[in-house]
Image (cartoon, rainbow, N blue to C red; front, side, top):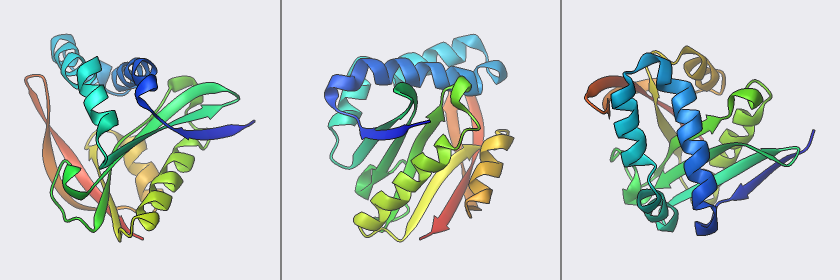
Length: 171
């Protein structure tokens, strides 16, 4: 089994859009109304929005491949680009998704290790993320890596207001 991480470029916008919609739907589709899900996918993962995010110098996307197949991705934000303003000495993991057929193979750990590496390289002292309160497998994964809950915020999906737990880890 070979694993490769690669930073995304503007040329990857189509693949990023496809995997973003697929993995978000896999993770949250069953727990949300289809109209809310469709509205969110259209807003968050349209070509213009993803192009803007890929072009932002305070964000970075990484694809992870297993045996040459695109298996998941990571998005990190730093500086003033974080979705919550917890300070510029922190790094946010905004998105980390793995395609269903690649889950439970250690790829999430590879992506989180990449986030830790980036944080250290840009002199950040804490990594934080938001995780949906009902995503038990993700919460367990982050806890296993040493993340603890430090707060919460509202995540709006269409017309649905949902509670995300803010989890953080000092590095």
